[in-house]
Structures are given as C-alpha cells and as structure tokens.
Length: 384
Image 1 (cartoon, one colour):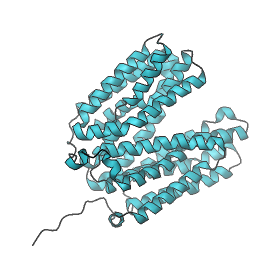
Image 2 (cartoon, rainbow, N blue to C red; image 1 turned 180 degrees about the vertical axis):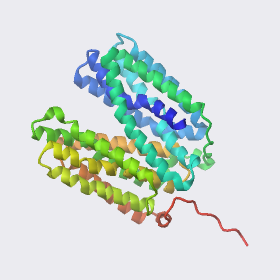
Image 3 (tube, helix red, strand yellow; image 1 turned 30 degrees about the vertical axis):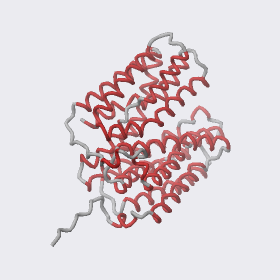
Image 4 (cartoon, one colour; image 1 turned 90 degrees about the vertical axis):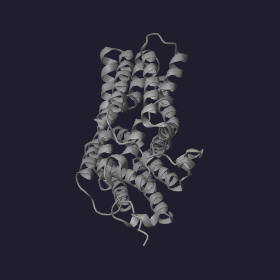
C-alpha cells in the first residue's frame, strides 16, 4: 500500500510538465509561453527537492509530505479557477514546483529500512519500473483531462490524486526511518559533504543528458525520413525497452557487485545506441531503440544500489540530489544537442557517464567496499 500511495502522490509532479503546457496553451497562451511555464515548474521543483528531503530527514517524512502536499493542493485548486491573471498564474506555477512533495526521494531513502539488504537491488528495480509506468500514464491523464473537460479540470485532478496519495501513504504502517546523526543535522552542506555523492551526481548528470536527448533523436530520424508526425515512435519504443529491462533486472539476483553491474549496463547503453544511429529507416531505428532502453532501467536501479552502498543511511536528501542531477542533465543535455543536432548525442553522453563512473570508482577511498558481492553490511568482530 505504501508503494501505491507513493505512486498516486507522485502523479501530480509527473503530470505537471504536460498538464501546464496543454492547460496554458488551451487557455490562450502561446506555445512558447506555455512551454516556458512548464519549464519554470520543472526548474523550481529541482531546486527544492533536496532541501525538502533534508527537512524530511530531520523532522520526519510524514509531517513534511503532509505540509507540502497540502500547499501544492491549494496551489492546484487556485490554478483551476477560471480567468486567473497571468502574473498570478506564473507565481502559482512557480510555487507548485517549489512546494512539490519529495515523495520519490523519501521512498528511495526508505528501501533499506523496508526490505532486507540482499533484496535492495530488486526493490530499486521495482522502483524504477513503476516510475516508467508512472511517466507513461501521467501525460495521457493530463491530456485526457485538459482536452476532455477543460484546462481547469487537469489541475483539479492533480490536486485530488496528490492528496489521495499522501493520505494513503500516511495511513500505511511502516518501519520508522533511521535517525539523522546530530553532527550531520548541524552541517549546512548535509549529504553534499560526501564526495561520493557528488561524483554519483556527476554520473547521473550525464545519464540524464542521454535520457533527455532521446526525443530529439526520434525527431531527427523522423524528419530525415519525412515522417515528422511519427517522431514519438522512437521514444515510445525506448520506454517499452526500459520497462522490459527493469522487469528483467528485478526478476532475479544478478552476479557481481553494484559497481560492476552499473558499469556493464552503462556500457551496454553506450554500445546499443550505435545500431540506432546506423539504421536506415525510422521503423528499424525505433525497434533498435528498444535495446538501449532496456539498459536504462537497470542502470538507474544499480545507481540506487551504489547510493545505498556509499551512503548506507539512505537519507531522502541524498536521493533528492540524485534526482536533481538527472533533471538538470536532461535540460542541459537537450539544450547542447539542439545547438548541434546529431543522432550520436545519447551514445556520447552515456560514454561520458561511463568514464566518469569508472574514474570515480577507481579513485574513491570507499572502493574496497565494492569487492563484496552483496549489499550486506559488515559485522563488527566481538572483542575477545
């Protein structure tokens, strides 16, 4: 029930980019202005997720989630009102991003408390798979609400789903999270004090860049074949591959350490983009995109395994910073790729992510931990 409640609570933030774009465009805004408002919401959410995650670590998940969900519900209800002036709309959309509940970060930080250590890879794979389903269904829900009953109904639906998800999560009995050490609670940098977290954020920055350029590659190949209307075919096949890869990754225990699995799946993602670049038609390229997509979900889930290993306390703040790195990487990656259009950008970004991870794991003082084949915590020897 906790996972179901978390998914419902995350639906508004997953719907937000499409919802704001379509609702504002249907309300009379230009496509450029509607896209800018959608980007404003995403940027605002990225800025505050680690800070809200830190608040959840210090003061408890439920109070922070309840307060932020209540605030965003009021914001969405205000946006649903007709004839809202544009300055107020801009302020409300920015607030909806700034106050987005850190639901995903809180859930990822709880997995070490909810499942045995040896089951963490499966839990992270399940998390990634459900996220794929979420981000597939959310745009469809947003479009159906906006074009079915009006622009305001989309915001109303987001408010209802978010409130219901938070209530369901709050009423689900769960193991209490580990307390944050007092020394860390007083540190203004928090989890950013960890060099391993900063390196892991760098790796996810380039993974996000690779993910963000998939849609651009689909558009470039479709335009080359004079089938621009079918530009969504390649990203759709990529998402199907990612879902299948996540299910396969979580279906069994794979050999090797989290580090070796992460390097293997990132290398597979890099190499698998080469056939996509060489395919002569949009249809064959879309089918080939299933393979790099299949490597995406296992890469992200083993990235969560690495975070749990290097930061074993599993704070929501650390998960928030990883999500920020992915989001910023998507934005920067597509901005750079748009300046120099090429179908090779995803492979290049994935290769840089692989090189960054290899260098980090080679130089990290925590590298000896990676020689164990499970995430089991070391036991202290009894004094004789």
